[in-house]
Structures are given as structure tokens and as C-alpha cells.
Image 1 (spheres, rainbow, N blue to C red):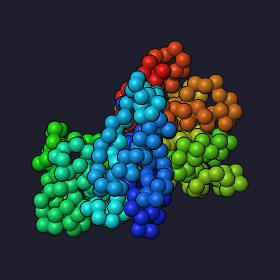
Image 2: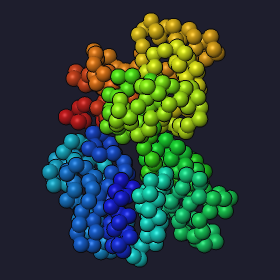
Image 3: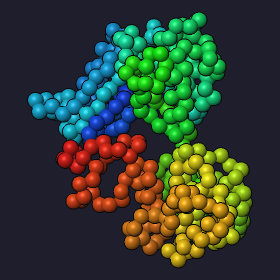
Length: 399
């Protein structure tokens, strides 16, 4: 649903009834991941996609039916020899789709409207929805904000009932909602969308209720240190990957908009001082291109102790050995140094700034998705992995 937040927010503001089909789980070589959505309004207007075309017709029909009867349904689509091109995934994958009607009389319409509004404003938010559990809970929704406050409810009994008062005090919530808030906030920290199992009493033991938690967060940050020629190319690659890109350099003559036209932010400051003062999180990528010990060492001493997603540094292997020695001298441990990717980038034989930026971007993607960086041809390695890097489809499954 949040995948289409901007357009759906407009529909909600106009008072339209609509139904949203959201991919809540995938298996094998599914074409789109969890959170992908397709929506249909009462006039038959369609936006979005759940499968890149394979099952869109069947999902459209489910949305129309949900708009008519007001029922939330969970549907599974997989490869079908008998009907592969009508309602199957020809790639061999499996997807589960939750179809939710957002009509004027829907009990969670206000929750969905608030979620779409927050996402459209660029605020971090998560929507937890029941996809398995007691039948009366299917589709119930809880909107969780970054500060832990929430709207709606999953069906627990407390004063105000489902959809009751918004609160930031978890002690006032029923057990199920309190557990859902905790899980959603954890997923917000990394911008992850996926499923989680909790029991009906709110404990983390699986077996009671399965929630689909969909997050919408501001773009992750890429901070490039060093306004060198390679930086301009890396800025373009970072923007292409969806990062908010900042370039920091202590030398004002190099850190200019003329040299770095694509950067979202250009900061003139000592790199380590800026890194200590700016915000980072578990999705942040740090690329150190300064290639100068007076910048690199204090910067990396700080960077390798932050809970960020990726820290890489440019330089030759000789430079890396010298850098490693200096970092040990300032007290970094083996575990901290193991987080450093140096020399930065995959071995593509890159020479130009653009090729080098591609090799760095490729390593960032591989680190994020659990890839190996080896050619798929003849390797037998999985083509797709889930967000934790586990296999989500073999090459044979995708054939």
C-alpha cells in the first residue's frame, strides 16, 4: 500500500473508495518483492503492479470483488501447468497477495488514510496488518510512527477498542498491539518490509498471528567523503540506487556545486567532525575517497564504530595495509576493522571514474542483498535473495 502512497493519498483525500492488493510474501523467483502493490478504485482505475504482468488480471478481479463485498482476502499465486498464462507466475515463483478494501465503511479506513498521509509527507511510518490468525483479525491494521505512537489496533480489547486512542505509552496498549508496535519500530530502523510471527498474548513465540509490516522511510543516506573526480560519478550512481547523497570535503575549492551537480548536499568540513555531528542509521552507506591519512584515519576511527550498513575506503592494497596499521594504533579492534571494505568496490577491471563508481555501487548492492559478486553464468548461485541474504530462488527455479 505504501508503495503507492502519493497517488492513494490523493484518492483518499478525494473520498474515493478503492481496494489495494499488496504482495506480502514471495517464494522462488517472484518478479516483485513484499510491499509491491496494485490498487483499483470504484471507477475501475488501476495503478501499480504486483507481478509485472503475470497475474494482474486476476488481482484486478479480486480488487473489484473486495470493493463490492468489503471483504479482505489473502490469495496465493504460483506456477500452474494448466493455467500458467492466465493466473500463474510464468517465472516459477510464488506470491501471496493481501487484498484490502478501503471503503467509506471500512473499519480501518482512518488508519490507512493516516498512513498514506504520513508517507506522502515523507515521514517514517509502518503499517502492521494481520495476514494469518483468527479470521476476524484478517486485515486489521495498526499504524506505527517512528516515536512509537500508533493509530488503530489489531483487535485487542482495551478501552476504546480497535482504532481507539493514539498513544505513545505502550503500557496502555493490549499485548498484541504492544508487540506489533515493537516489531514495527525495529523494522522501521532499517526500512525493512516483511512478515513477523507473534502469539496472540503478544509474546515473540510464533504460532498465533502473522503480521505483514510495511514500512515507508525517507531515502537511505550515502555520504561520500572526498570531492575527487570519482566522487561526481559515485554521486550519480548513488542517486540511481535511490540514496540521498551528501559529499563532504574539508577543501572548499573542491567541494563545489559546479564539480558535484548531482549531490543532494555538499558540506565543507573536516570529514570526521561532520560524521560525528550528522545523523546516520542502519541503512547509511559511507564511502571514503579522500585517500589521505590525515582525513582517513580519524574519519574511519569514527565510521567503523557506528551501526551503519557499509563502510568502504578507496586506495591501493599498499594504502590499505598502511591504513590498517594506523587504525590499529588508534585502538580499533579486529572486529571493527573487519567491517571495512578496502579497497572499495568489486573487481570489474574498472579504470574510469564511471567504471569505478559502478564497481563501488555493485559492492554496496551485494552487501545489502547478500550477493557474492560472482557471475551468474555457470555459478549456480541464487539469483534472488530475501532481505537477510537468504536464498529466495535458485537459477533452476527461475529458468
